[in-house]
Amino acid sequence: MVRVLIGGVLALAIAMGVGRFAFTPILPAMQAATGLGTDAAGLLASLNYLGYFLGALGAGLVPHGAVRTAVFRTALIASVTSTAGMGFTEDMAAWAVLRFVSGLASAGMFILGIAMTLDALARAGRESWTGWLYTGVGIGIASSGLFVALMGDRLGWRGDWLWLGLACLGFGTLSWLWVTDPPREAHHTAAAGTAGGGSPLPSAPLVLLTLAYFLEGAGYIVTGTFLVAILKTMPETAQLGAAAWMVTGLAAMPSGIVWAAAGRKLGLWRALILAHVVQAVGILLPITGSPAAAVVSAALFGGTFIGIVTLSFTLGRQLSGGASARVIGALTAVYGLGQIVGPVPAGLVVARTGSFDSALVGAAAVVLASAALLAAGAWMAGRPGPATVALDARRG
Image (cartoon, rainbow, N blue to C red; front, side):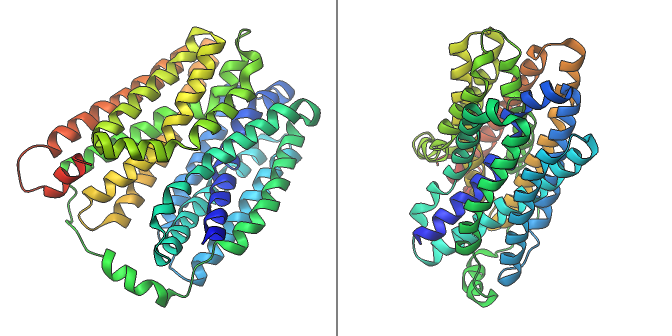
């Protein structure tokens, strides 16, 4: 089981920490060398998230067994090749295709890798290990940030992409070998216990959670895309760019575990609201221009976004009334849709104003709006009535 968990952690590190988010620390060097504008960078980011959105929709349709293993491995190959491929060209159209493919691959690896790893842990009675799986995202972010900080000046942006792709190839071999699905028949017993139909209409708290998750995707991704570029534009923080991204990854590593504990102590609704408020503060801090504030911003951002995913999935499962797979798929899709929406207007605003301040204020406002929807959902879940599942969810 340890090998399966390690393979799952590495899959998340490759898919999310590198495949999706290595773009952030490498972006400033790409812009300096190629003249890539912030608006075009925002477009590339949104194409990546469009790929993720479509990949998330498709991943939920993949059947158990050998097919799921094959699709996961195909996504792994696509992730490695699209990462390395960024270093072979300066053509905007080629970059667009590569970032889109990377998004598709990230979704396949993320969703299927998590599903197969969690299934394997459940069959072995090791559900208590699942919190460690999400550390892979932070490990990938921290590792790519450290690599760019140490080697970026020597290798250049092309070398960064190529060597990260090579590293993903090496570590991905372990995921290829260790993250697999047994024959479909092995899933029948578990499926029988989880395939309840639930209510055909979602409850009001679940609708509000879903809308809030969409806004979170649109708001957090502005910092997730441009954090290093933001710091590079200010003389006071220019030297902190890649190092700050490494801080983001280090903070993200225990985030899921820490916020899960907060959810048990405070209740899931309250913990989610708190995480959104903390994240909004982190989004705004770079406006101060303070190096210390920049480091704190990176830590708060990394320390909340994985936690918000973990809490939202847990709450969604509790509110689903037996339709957990459908709800998790819907949450993943709306989150991906929010990530498509966020970077483009942010990039356009920066291109027109020459400053990230307005984009950051807008992103923080969107995250706070998400917190307001969660507060409404918590209130509705706490109203007396037949929605006992919602009441249980509020109590954590």
